[in-house]
Length: 305
Image (cartoon, rainbow, N blue to C red; front, side, top):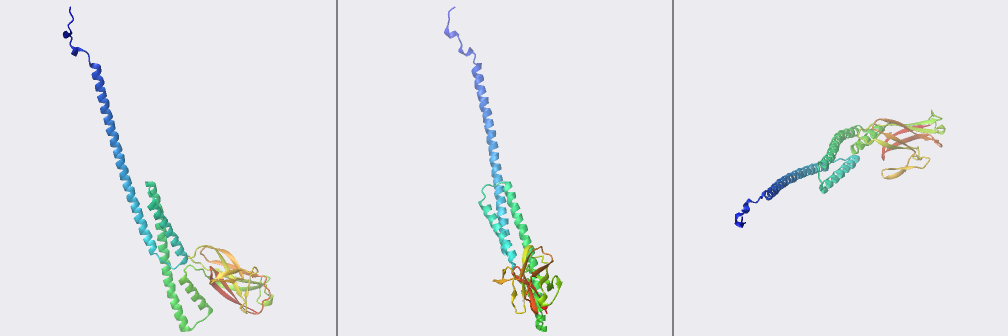
């Protein structure tokens, strides 16, 4: 049988392996495209979510900044003549300024930082509300005291009363008008002793004791105070302390007779200050003046025979 090339049909050759590979490649490409589309969509959603979150954080930042600006304006409007409260208010204003600076410089925002700044702002708001209440209380007190001061001056003018009690009350009223938190002493008494027994004979006295009560004052700042006394002899000389100590009063350094450190917590505080080993006293009127916080807060007299 003769071989005839034309009798062989090349279409009859098996081609299944090439077709299968092409089909698998197409499926793989389709799968990759689907995965890529899914990843792209998820990435897009994440970017959009981050944009939305950043936008919300910026809104929160602006809200915090606006609230702090309003609070700082309210702090700026607060006025008081009380020196201690003025210092405390100035310190809170410095805290607010520092918070505003940090808010403006902050670049990395998250919800944790927003909460932190909100807490700081809340603390400032609470402090300012406390200042408002205290200033209102001081204003009411000053108004009341100013009215009492006017009334006392009218009574003193009409009755011509120049007694020691009237002078002390007038001084007390003037001091309270100026400084609602200034301490005062009441029931001041100067006593004389010989060997721990009461004795009013000048040559026998070996100890002078000043007794008084530091009066309660809810506006005064609690803490340690140093109380000074000055004992004045009949010739106006001061009985000086053994250590030659001095303190400042009305801008001048003056000698004291004795001093005592106490812990004042705003309530009535009875106390005594001793001047011991007294020598060389002579008959006449002796006076004692009590000082605290740079102010004279009480006085009394004693006559020795």
